[in-house]
Structure formats: C-alpha cells, structure tokens
Length: 103
Image 1 (cartoon, helix red, strand yellow):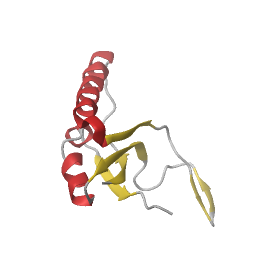
Image 2 (spheres, one colour):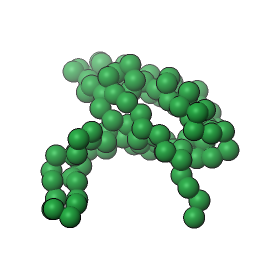
Image 3 (cartoon, helix red, strand yellow):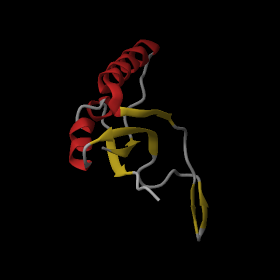
C-alpha cells in the first residue's frame, strides 16, 4: 500500500447554513466509509498565494487549491477509483492525486 495526496480544487461554497450542514454530512459519511484507507483527514484551505521567480501573486493560481487529504491505496488507479466517489466531484470540483514518494 502507498499513500496518496488528494488535492481538492474548486467546488461550490454552500449558500446557506443548512446547505453547508448537508455538504458537511456528505463529507463526514464519505470519510467514515474510507475506514483505515484515510491516513490524514486534511482540511479545507483559504485563498493561496503563488510564489515564483517573477514575484508573489494573490490569485491562488490557475486552479486554486480548496483542500487536501491523504489516503492509502494499492496503487494510483485504486486511489483514482476512490476519488470518483468524493463529494467534491458532485459539487463541481476535482481531485488531483499524487503518490507520496519515500525519500
């Protein structure tokens, strides 16, 4: 088994507290269903800055990060299959997946 970082991009912010509670319930249920595959629950993130040789930009880049988590899976294909069921997908977002490499 290997660890994979899920980098969440996009997704629609809830319009009401009730909608927010419903979205959170979906995430909690999905994460509970991952069982021991969930290595680190991660967190949502705020607006980011992009640092490059040309300076610092306040725009969060072309596809801003909205959150992250770490899961364990047999391989990247298995990690992709798990990601297909992530609540952010049905909420207009996407999941970028990369394997943590051991140093």
